Length: 443
Image 1: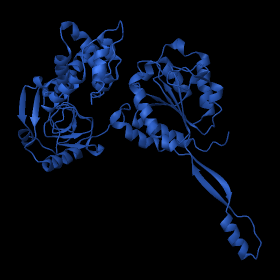
Image 2: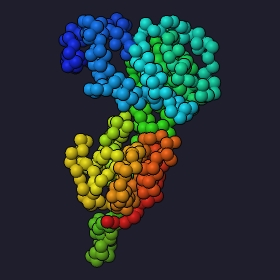
Image 3: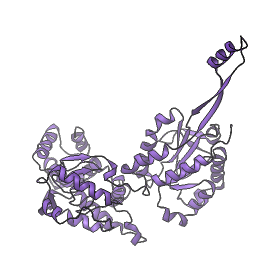
Image 4: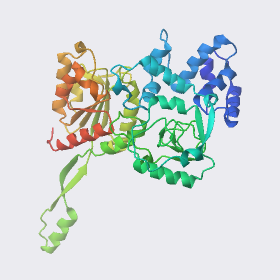
């Protein structure tokens, strides 16, 4: 762990070597680095020598641990806004933007950075987990009671559950799970993210049970990956915690073909019965062969947070698709073709793509939101050619469905190709439509 860290810091002009890793591991072993904010403080003490190192160190830290890459001439806020880490963090608060047409991005960035730098020193009070559970009703009905502001307030505390048996925690968690209908964050009752609940992830609950997410503070006594305990919202955009649900819906693609074969054993058996008169007996063989073309918009920063999960989703399907998964890339829209490589350097003319059998299911991934002048008539004709060749074509859009009606280009492309949200629920509806269009013959 952290083997590449010294070289990474040296790339930013900082002094680091194998001793840096050794001292960091000792700090973690002694309980000095339980949060990402702790890691920042410990490494800052190990790596920086003077105030002039603070800027390069922070830049290097964000790049290594959060993959926030501050490019030349770019400020921190701009780098954060286009980062996957920030966009995934915003998904922790579903519906947060419903209250505002234009969310205060400066406020969101400040809140994000506050959580990144939350350290053990910020936890001002260690409360009794036993007291929390004594005053908590595990059979309480679900309500949308958590708020984003609660997360920061509760994480100033930590709740100690080490004095409570795992059997008791499991019993209560199962009771809570029966009543939980949505994801929660920043509380002390539900199975969710942040806060001081004894079950969930990303919070401050020594001796609790981690459910979902990834470990960070190493405080949990037990880890459970069972999604039954951690409700998955199938209507939110594709992300780490609902990708397997999306995969289950994607596996619903049906594509059976049949061929007539000579049934040799039956022919011989009947021929013997008929005294040597061998009449050919045929049988129908049904085979299931799924063929998929994946067309991904990987050109702009707005699509960056989704490329990884889309690639993971369809990579998990490769065994099912065998060698019949064709992947192409484009930026915003297609102009006479697409690219066969991630870097978009190998152009494939649309006529070559159209040579694939019409039984291929075509999944287009992109936000479809661009300047009207980019979607030329020639481009629209290219999309129409694809839809005509592949009747089972669907468009999966990661952009919140509320914003579709306000985009000229989205509405234009929706008229050409059926469009669904890039969510497990959207994929389910897309697959249902595809299956209705089965059996359109050879070509």
